[in-house]
Each structure stands twice: as C-alpha cells, then as structure tokens.
Image (cartoon, rainbow, N blue to C red; front, top):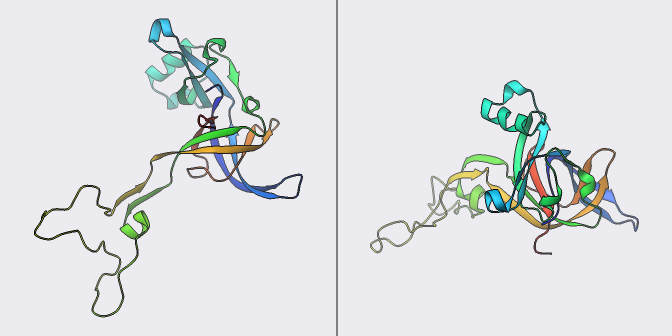
Length: 210
C-alpha cells in the first residue's frame, strides 16, 4: 500500500452529490500524523513507518513511550501504528501526513474496534430466533435451545454458538470510497459505515483488493 493514516471517527451524516444523489458518509478526523520511526530492510528486515496521532500531556505516557518519542524529537503522541508503505523510504522521521494524502474517488480499507456489548445472549450475539411462547415452552424463551446430540458425542461441539462477550474486536471494512476530502477541517468523508463508536480510533489505508 502507498497511503495510510490514523484517524478518529466523528460520526455519520449525509452528503448530496452533484447529480442530486444522497449518500450516507462517515466523518473521519484524519491526521495530522507524524512519522515517529522508520523501519529499514538493512536494520529490521522490512520497510515500514510508524505514525503517531493525537497530542497528549506528557504525564499521561510512561518513560519508555516518552523516550521513544523524544528520540524522534516529536511531541507526546497518544496513538502509534505501523504501516508497511511502498514509499516508506521517501518519508523521513518528523514528516507530517494529513488528510490530503487521499483524494475524492479513492477506495480505502478502514480498520476499527467495534462497539462493546458485554456478555450477550445468542439472540443478540448470533441473531438466533427465540423459542415459542406457547405449548409448554419455557419458562425461558431466549435461551440457546438444543446443544446437539445426547448420547453421542455426549459433549458440546467446538464452534457452537453460545452466549458470551460480544463486540470489542478489530474489524476491517474493505473497498469504501472517499466521497470528499475537506483539507480545511482535516476530515475525510467516507461512504457508508465503519466499525467503532464515536471518537474511536480508526486506521485508513488505500484498498489492497481494488
């Protein structure tokens, strides 16, 4: 990939195109990101850059994090992420990447952390149907239901959809299009929905399968 940036999901809105079509868009505060570290083939075995995003008070970082950032002579940054960019060799430590890296019409992949729903039942977690509410079924109507065969294999098979922790997992949405780039406000307007709650951190990169 040759384009990547760290951003913050601000929320969703809608946008009218020149032909009058209304499209739903997600507003992402993209950058500015600072190049904190460069990985080289000679020293590290691969080529990549580490980007930092969102300045924070130094007291909120520990000593190893502060030492890492001071070595790059950058401000205290809250979020760090490494990207294997094709043009990593051309970027120098301290360089800034902003939303103008992308342009309208680009296709991007967006990675984020989904909303957390805590311990959830199978109806919410796996979209299963509830049991009948008549003919002696109950007293619980939202339970899992059959666990499988009885005497053989006499156990619950791996992969069975069960209640449990739902959400808070990394999800990547592929091939979303950039509808508009607002350089003045530093935001990307990306068509459709992306994972995560408002103000959550997302990673935007050019689409790898498009």
